[in-house]
Length: 618
Ligand code: ATP
Ligand code: MG
Image (cartoon, rainbow, N blue to C red; front, top):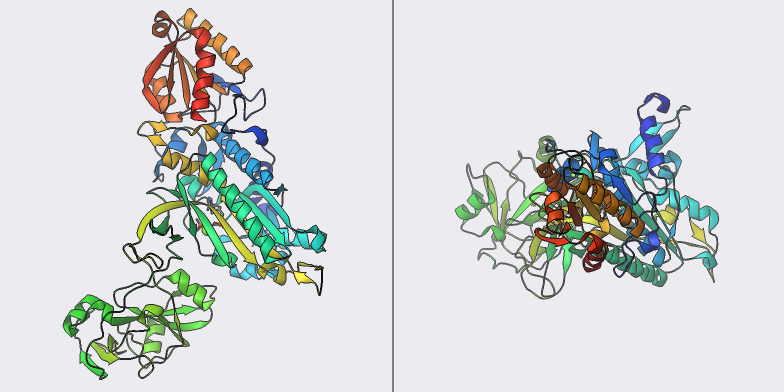
C-alpha cells in the first residue's frame, strides 16, 4: 500500500478533521416547541443573508444517480455537491440544516446527561486488533498506512477508541455510569453508496457510548437514550416507529432502530397494529401452522424428470410446497452448512449468520454443493449429506412424512422424517417473515412497510470491555468488565429523511426546526423599482433586528424564476415585496406549506404576522 502522504486520503483526512469542528448555534435554545424568540439557532451575524452574495446555486438538473427525491432536491436546492461516490461537500445552505439537526441532538443528549467529546477520525489498527474487528469488519473499513508503514483506519464507528479512553481513565464503580457522545464524520467504504446522504461513504454521525457497573443501570440509561432519540426524531417533525433490530457486526444483546416511514426506505419493517409489535424484517418472528402430514411414512425415491421449481415438484408429488423441505448449502467462516426450510418459505440470512455466529456467509459455489450433496446444484436434500452442520428452521420441526430433494439428479424423496432419515444438528429460527404471517402475540396478520433507519441503539454487554480489558473495581468482589451501550444517529440521513417526508412536486417543504432559514424575503424587480427596493431593504434590516433568520432574495432575475427557486428551497415563511403587493397595501405573506394562500400584510404588521406564524409552526 502506498504511504499516507502520497495518497489523496491526506486531503480527505484534513477535511474530515476540519469538518469535525464544533458548529455554530446555541443548542440549548434551538427550535424549542414553545420558544417565542425567533432567533433560536444562529448567532447574530449568521442570522441573515443576501442571496446575491450567497454560495447558493439552484439547478433544474437532476444528477443522473439521484434516484430518491431527497437526493434530487438536495442537489437542485444547492445543499450539497458530489465529488466521488458517497462523498459530498455540504454547501452553506445545506450545512445550516445539518447544524440545526446537530443542535437538536445536542440539546436532547445533554438533557439526559450525555457528555460531548471529540475522538479521532484516524484510528490506530492496534485497537481494532484488540477487539478482533481489524479482521472481522471487512471491506467497509478503509485502512491506510502512515509514513512509517503503521496501519490505521478511518473510523466507521468508535467503540474501540472510546473503550480505550475509558479503560485508561475510569477505574472504580464510583466513576460509573458514564455516557459520552460526539458528532463527527465517519467513513465507511459502503459497497453501494447511493441515495445521496442516505448511504454515503463519508457521512456525519452522532455516536454515543455508555459504560455501567450493572445491568440495571444499563437498562435505565438505555431507556433514557430511547427517550432522547424519540424526542429528537419528533422535534424534526418526522413520522417514525421504533423497531426491534438485529445487533449486526457490532454484537450485543438488545437493539432498537428508529425508522422513518418512507416508500424509498432501504429497510423492510414488519408491524402488527393489534399488539404493537414492530421489527426490522431481519429480526422479525412469526408462528406458522404446521401443515397436515402426507399419509405415507415410507421413505421412497420418486423420479421428477425436468422439474426444477418447488411448485413443479410439489404438483407432481401431489403435495403442497409447505409439506416439502428445501435445502440450501452455505459456506461460512466455520465450514459448510446445510439449511433446511419449508418449501414455501425463504431463509433469512441475517438470522442464519447469527445462529452460526459467522463472520461471513454465502451460498456455496457449484463445486462445494456437489461435494456436499453428491449431485449438481438444485437437487439438495437433508438425507445423506456431507456437511459440517445441518440447521433446520423451527417451522420444519413438526413436519412429518415430508418431501425433499434426493441429492440425485431428477429425483425426490417422499415420506421423510427427522431423526429416522436425517439428523439435524440444530433447529433454529432462520425464517424470513413475510406480510400476512401471524403475529406471535395477537395472531393477527403482520404488515410490511419501508423505512429509513435514522438511529440505532444497542445494549452491547461486555464484548468490547472483555476483549479490551476495560474493567472497574466493583463495590465488592473482584474487578469486572464494564457493561456497555452504544447509540448511533445519522445526521445527514435524518435531514434527508425529513425531505423524503416533507416535499411536493415543486420542492422541499422544510419542517421549521430543520429549515436553513425561517423566512425567505423576496424583492421583485428591485433594481427597476425604487419603492420595492426601499421597502425590502428596510424590512431586511428590521427582520435582522427582530432576530429572524432571513434569506433575502435580492437577485436580479424574473419574478417567475424567483418563485420557482422559493418553492424549491422550501423555507417555511415567505414575504414577497412587489409593486403589485405595495399598491394593494403591503407585502405578500405566505407559508411554503400552502403557497396558494397569500395574504397582503401592511409593512408595519409583518413582523407580528411572522411571529404568529412561527408559533403556529412550532
Ligand atoms: P445500515 O443498516 O443502514 O447500513 P448500520 O446499521 O450500518 O446502518 P449503524 O452502524 O447503526 O448503521 O450507524 C448508526 C446510524 O448512522 C444509522 O442509523 C444511520 O442513521 C447512520 N448511517 C449508517 N451508515 C450510513 C451511511 N452509509 N450513510 C449515512 N448514514 C449512515
Ligand atoms: Mg451499515
